[in-house]
Image (cartoon, rainbow, N blue to C red):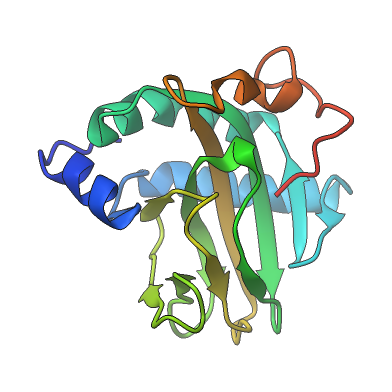
Length: 197
């Protein structure tokens, strides 16, 4: 997990999102994709509005903590973790245009694996304002200001697609008190008010 280019912080400040190809090593992605299969077979994945997901599973909480330092350095912002979420999308699932809750001030979407003939883009920007499609292969990430930048996906044409999401707040910003998403620490069960991804 490295992001050394000096223009990353400026690009993120300008565009409010940043693509970092190959940011998470493929062996880690493969491990986490298989972790999702295990969670699913054990009944730990819950239906949500876009597929099936899991809030704050230990593997993804660990990924969130591991990524916080390199991302803070790349963005020039000290990040505090809030929560992680992982989802498996299946044929026909989509992601409706939306912005996120304050705990997702700075969000990261990571492609873990897929069974599809083509990459499935996530769109950054409102559907009516010429959004940019971003096709992420395994290990690629997009970092974005989740409470500012609308994002969405069109219906998925493949068989399955696994995505992890890790969320942060700016330690020097107005949402800093939302660290850990109302929990005592990372890796703990969700607070009663936490709605997940």
